[in-house]
Structures are given as structure tokens and as C-alpha cells.
Image (cartoon, rainbow, N blue to C red; front, side, top):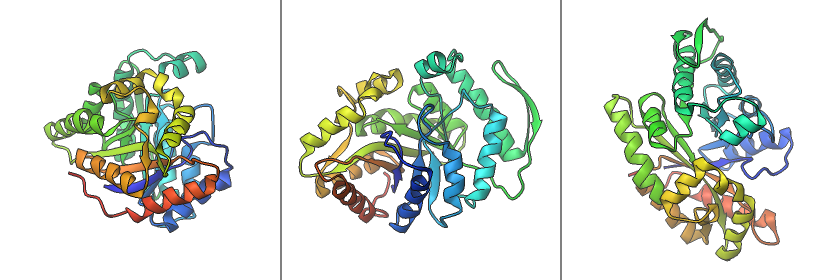
Length: 313
């Protein structure tokens, strides 16, 4: 199981330079990857950040976790992704997701009707353009006939935020895997991994990636850490898509799936994810206590020391 970082999930204020510096720092510290969410109304455009970070790094994988599909036409998404792929020398993984009905309908004024159909058609068009350079697709939501050429680019791996059974089947059949958020170890092992692996096997596709994203805090005061997680991530427990995962896990809210404890306890929890079938773990570092910088440094140090030490079951 590879170890990476997620930057921006806490909606913490940061500058564009700081976002790029995060990728540079993560590479220097030996992490396998760094991922940037694209929150519709907060923060920077994730692919722009990755394009800039790509020019300042050499090795580290750069991913989006995740970009909402509804606001961006698949032809535009494919072009942006291929451009970012050039900028980062082939190290981009494109994470896509549906977002949530309140954001898409109430904020953006778009229709969230038939989300699974939308995603299947979106992936069909986007992958054809990225992989083949052309598409001729006539579906219910998309009718696209186009060619696309981006000099010096290369194919872009795609993962999707697949949480429900239909989406997990799609992730195994069509793309390279899933990127989760707020999925605990029971949910990963009993709900996500069996479904996505079965779908990939039936479709004759390679073993899918299971990228697990969660908040992490290395601390000697786990109760305070969970209280902090409850405050910072409370909204996720109120969104239908994440609520389903928390219910499968059998917990009340995001604080209960947050990875907290001292160094040995956090390592044990990460090993459980590897045993459950996670291929990658990306940590949103949660600062706790009075000295936030010291807390962040302690968590990053432990995570960095675990790079290369886990194997997925």
C-alpha cells in the first residue's frame, strides 16, 4: 500500500505558492503521492495546481481527489487533463466524482438527475478522447463527436469517487479504480474492495486501485483529536453519499473513521487498511493540540516513515 498526502480537504486557507510547495515538500519527504481536492466554491483549480507543481517536482505522483464532473464538459476535462499531464511529465492521476445533489442543483443550478448514467457517459467520452484522441458518442446526456490532440501528452489514469454498488462496478469495468473519502476499514474491506475487484475481473481489466483518503492525526490525546475531527469534518456526515458509507461502517460521524492515536496505533490502523485491500492511503493531516505545527510535523514524520512498508492483501 502506497502512502500519500491530501492537501486542502480541511478547507484551510492557503496561497497558490503554498499549494505548489506542498507537492515539493511531499516529494522531498519521500511520499508516493500528493492529491488535491477540487472543492467547487473554495480553493484553487486542482489541475492548474498540479500543472504548476509538476514543473517543480520530478518523481511524485500528482492526483485530483476529486474533480466534480457536472460543471465541466468531458471534452474540456480531457483537454485540461492532457495538458496537465504534459506539465507534470506523465505523473497525473485524474480523480473524478459526481459531487453532491445540493451543490450541483442548489448552488450550480444544474440537474443531478440520473447521476450514475451521467458518470458512465462522461467516462466513455473522456476516456475515448484521452486514450484514442477521438470520440463519436451518442448517449442520453452527451452527444459528442470530436477529435483531440495535445502535443507531448500521454494517457492519463482515471479513478472515480465510487461509493455505491453501481459506481463501484463502473470503477472496475471502465477506469483504473476508486478514490474514497470517509470510508472506514470495514467499509473498504467488505463493501468497496469485493465489488470493484469483481467488476474488474469480469471485465478482464487489471487489478483496480483502491485509494483511501481519511484525516490522520498522530497524538497522545485521541479524544481531543476526534473532537477536532468532528468539528472540522462534520459536514461530510450530513451529505447523503458519505452518510451511506458511515452507516455501513456503523459509526455516527466522520470523527469515528478518522485515523488517530500514537505512532504505533496509527501504524496498526494503516496496516488494517492494507489488509482490507487498499492499494493506496492518502492522509489529510489533522493538526491537534495547542502547537499545530508540531502536531503536523509529528503526523507527517510517522506517515513518511511508513512509505514502502505496507503490502495490500
